[in-house]
Length: 455
Figure (cartoon, rainbow, N blue to C red):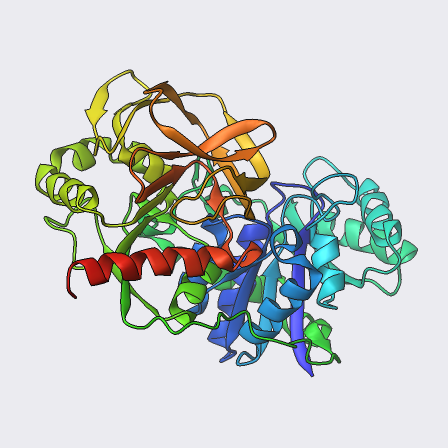
């Protein structure tokens, strides 16, 4: 028996994250070891999952991993848990392209997991049954087992909707509802939800969710639905054969930089690396490491603090100029540039490792999956190698020195910026499992640097 459940939505904004977090917290309170997952490329929701469950949350994304890779990650990470809870993305059938690659429905079928659908009951009565009926019958191969109704105005409203649903679909379990309550909404930023490190009230929020789940939702039925007979789908671990040992990778980890795919960090550690965290916000010096990795986050919310930490910037910049391999994604790219102009037009000086300037905008500049191909050897790739990632940003490069090298291409666009051979910066968050050679290349460069210092 392998307990697992997918929490899906009829669309974005119906309460998937709220209800997923609430169920995770309620199950943990009952003594369950809950393994969280997130469908798709999001970095923020998994952070909340991790804090609620006390276990790292992993992305299940068939665009990055393929069906076999999704099974490997799911089987490997869920085997020590009592129940796995998978939060969906967007609407149940929404994915990439005409085949809806990496949709919640596709992932649910790949891992053979039952689905609970969340719908929004605002300004609707019996018509809600037609919505659920459509989702139930759109794909007969999908194991849609239950429904939770959000934003119910009264117990009478719930009973009205429940009867309408059961009259049409007697085999579908109406698990309960959540009443209208604006206090349940997680605060949002321009990228979506706030980053985990900024959510100081999560404990109180979690307790409130548990109380509501236990009052309005049939938790025992959720547990019963999650019980599915399935084979162990794990054929091979997502691991890398490597003889590299004792390599230290510095990881930027603070309120400004915290967007990472957990599988990327796992792969680095599996290949022989030790992760050493540091903070560009509060540290005065970079720790003794053999390479650095700066992910995304919200550096635009901490520009003054980042600019003011001159001691750290000087130490970091000097070490990179001496050959320290440095990889940066999105927010990390912003930090690598000469300066960043905030939403009000105020300029802040950053590392100046890349002779470029960034400006924040109110308009989404780019979003979606990307496949890159290396146009030249660089920190992570050898020429011709490919990998997949995701991009989502509101900032843009307003100025860049033409001498800056472009290291890879996608959609006829040049990207992957490098001013030194040991630097690579990009708006794209790469998923290392899409090409394990990335990890090998990166650690080999780190080993060369380590040996050059006689370490």
